[in-house]
Amino acid sequence: MSKPVVGILMGSDSDLPIMQEAAAMLQEFGIEYEMTIASAHRTPKKVLEYSTTAERRGIKVIIAGAGWAAHLAGVIASQTTLPVIGVPIDSSPLKGLDALLATVQMPGGVPVATMSLGKAGAKNAGVFAAQIIATSDVKIANRLKVYRVEMERDVEEKAKRLMVITAAPEIKETAAVEPGTPAAKKKSRRRRWKKKPGGSSPAQGPTA
Ligand code: RP5
Image 1 (cartoon, rainbow, N blue to C red):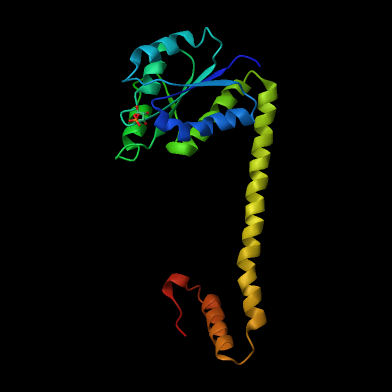
Image 2: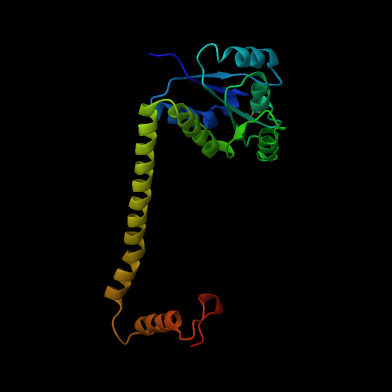
């Protein structure tokens, strides 16, 4: 097993269900990572120690997730020139707006690449870390390209499934409706409404 190149930090164990998404992505790309809990407020010495030694230990990117007054990513960024990716976590009564602003609003000169809130943000942090590593690792770059192709394929599959689902009731309805019955008349009224000349929109409703 090679040495970890990505460090995942989180403010509390309560952040773990979110931050696992970042770890899952790194695993998918075959990137070694380490993960620990360190809080900018509760264990500031540990955060300082981690940030100042990470580069020396071979870490290339740091992902930091925190909720509430989320200073973790910013404090780490203040102590290292490694790229720091921040994941604001929606664990507070303000539903993460506090963490988002605390993470994203870094003063000029000390950037934190802030992701979206919660699980999607943690997932994107994993992908973004892989993208940074990929700038000097062709194997990871190729895995990222495959990941994009698979994502595209997934969406197409979903679109096809949706077509089948939305077409099915129409097929059933056509087969079930006998011409001349009340159901058939209702159906034909609905068709007229859809095709009404003059471009009336469905929002205007049927005039028949
Ligand atoms: C932050 O405070 C952590 O990142 C966590 O999101 C939040 C709450 O922590 P716990 O009270 O659940 O430990 O530092």
